[in-house]
View (cartoon, rainbow, N blue to C red):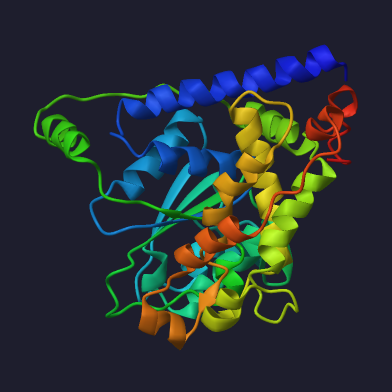
Amino acid sequence: MSQTDDKRAVEDLQAAYQRITDELAKIVVGQEQVIEELLVAMFARGHCLLVGVPGLAKTLIIRTVARTMSLKFSRIQFTPDLMPSDITGTEVIQEDRASGTRSLRFMPGPVFANVILADEINRTPPKTQAALLEAMQEHQVTVGGERHPVPEPFFVLATQNPIEQEGTYPLPEAQLDRFMFNVLVDYPTEDEELEIVKRTTTDLDVEVEPMLSAEQIGHLTTIVRRVPVADHVARYALRLARLSRASQPDAPDFVRDFVTWGAGPRASQFMVLGAKARAVLHGRQFVNDDDIRAVAFPVLRHRIRTNFNADAEGITSEEVIRRLIDTVPTIAANSEADQRGNISQVFRSADAG
């Protein structure tokens, strides 16, 4: 692919991003950072966990994103009595009236869609939560020893209420690690809240238009993975993840004091992938340190577990990440060509990306 084609591909994705955000703005007031992080994760083929108190439009954002992308959408309301088969589907006995023979037929569950909204995912027991693990990681479901692939593209976008503890089941670490981003949804500003009140207290009905098809999204996610990353930028992401582990010999003192365990190798992968997607969405063919820092918080905040000392002093994983970014120096590029990842050769084949 020529450099001209590379530039055109990046421009296409940036234009698609702008169209989607314009459509979302018709329905969702504010939350620009939440929307950007959500779209970055999706274009990097990652899953997202949205965390925020009730009433902050978490479900609305996810549903509207699915509508702007012309994707098959499925909402699963997680409850304490939800069974794994309610998510994945089950086999039923089907009788052939002509021959009288009976056979098992697989009835797909709601997980067989492009965008899965796992609403209040922490309100269901771990056994049911784990039913999503295979689909999230392998993009398939195994029922009765037979594998059933889920549609592509496939995204799990889950919501979680951080303040309601009664009747909830904390997500196990294995499942938390499957989510590329942990996105915090915060309260709107006063002006934004006024606009929300105005919009939701009238009979105004706003429709959003689909901007991208499933095929186009598949093509655009391939573009993201073909963006190169210079070694010094990838090493910066690696250092942020490795120095979050108290067992590292060169871990900072605050990590040793406040962290029980830090981020695993998946964090480095997701930071680089997220940085690639963010760079392209901002119209760049190369990744820089600012992209790594921008995605460090949603990638690391659910992968760093603080200890009792941190709880006693009010130190959260958010604060640990902030200190890591302040502490870990960026690694200088050797040249401008290195900074841009040698753009004349940047877009390799999708497999190499």
